[in-house]
Every structure is written in C-alpha cells, then in structure tokens.
Image (cartoon, helix red, strand yellow):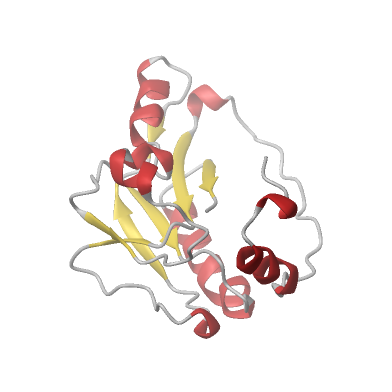
Length: 160
C-alpha cells in the first residue's frame, strides 16, 4: 500500500489538503439470507458512463454527485471514463473492465452457485468529490431505492 511519502509532492499536498468529510460509521445490517440466494449489483466511483450519456463534470470543485446507470455486461467499448484525477491510473481499466466492474467475476460466482444472480444494471459515480452533501442526501438514496426496487441484496463497491 502506498504511503504519502511515496507520492509525488503535488499529489501528496493534494491529499494532505483534501476536505475528507467527517462521517459516522454506518449501521451494520445483517444479511437475512444465504449469499447463494442473493442478487448482486456493482457500484463504482470510476466515473464511467455509456458513450451516449453525458459525461461527469471535469471541474473538481463542482463535485458532480450525479450517477450513471451501467447495463450488466457493458464493455469498455460501450463506456467512457470521465474521472480525470491524475492519481487515477486508467491503464488497467482500459485493458480489463473487471478492474472496476467485475462482471466476469460476478458471473463466475453465479455459475459456481455462490451467488444466485447479478442485477441487470449497475451504477457509477464520480470519485474524488470535495463536497458530498448532495451525494449523501439525494443521489445515493435514489440509487439505493432503485437497487431495492431491483431486489438487490448485496452491493459491491469498487472505489477509485
């Protein structure tokens, strides 16, 4: 794991000044059924969107707290990445979408019987948001409601 001393000076200064919000620990919710009977969805903060969808704002201070729906099985040819942080190395994502949207691994879990199913849609947010109020108050609850409507039991978060 990288430490601050390992980063370039500009990246280190950025992280030292980053306005991380003070958040309470979320309440733990026990899973009410075996994982083998659960539906999985993936939420990423890689700033992915379908090519035909509007990109996330590239203005860091604007804190684009919106989200984009990603259909299950989308390939990198179907998607674009709006995340522009120089700390986000896109090399691996461009080679294999499973780095941020592990569709293939999820399908393997279904085939093996570990999971019952994978949701038909997943969600992408922009990472590196200095202001998260709108995310916490509006867009994250919207996505949570949609996942509940889809009868999703487990969400895998792939933070970037």
